[in-house]
Image (cartoon, rainbow, N blue to C red; front, side, top):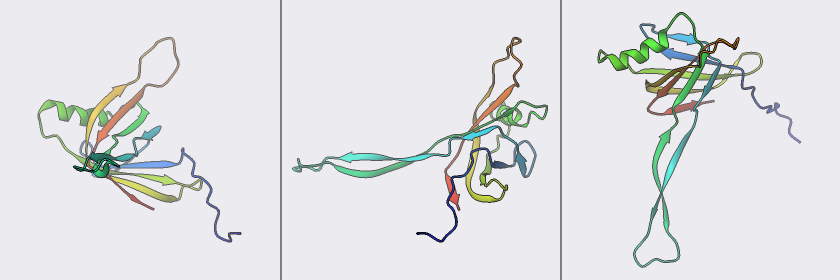
Length: 151
């Protein structure tokens, strides 16, 4: 029997996002409805050795990182869509870093994922429909050079 602390699962609704350098802001903690894309996988490269017919060598291939997808209510700040527009205008597009922090139910940090060299590869606004009374949702997808986990 364990005498340590409880290892209850963490709630999905307790998190915060910090983005560094979006549209002139040095550090901004932003409020988002959801965050997804915290994933990575390593390809398996099969190699058939000459004369060896009993098995195929399974070698470690490159690691691929999922794009981070952030969703929030579309508001008057327009900072996310302006950042995306910088990448389309041919001006001086800017890569950013950021972190997603998992919180417990008392809003204490538990762990975090940091990304670097992020850029906005996709921006989307939800459907506008006069027959619904829903909020407009802005979706931003960020491609990046990897996640660093710290617990």
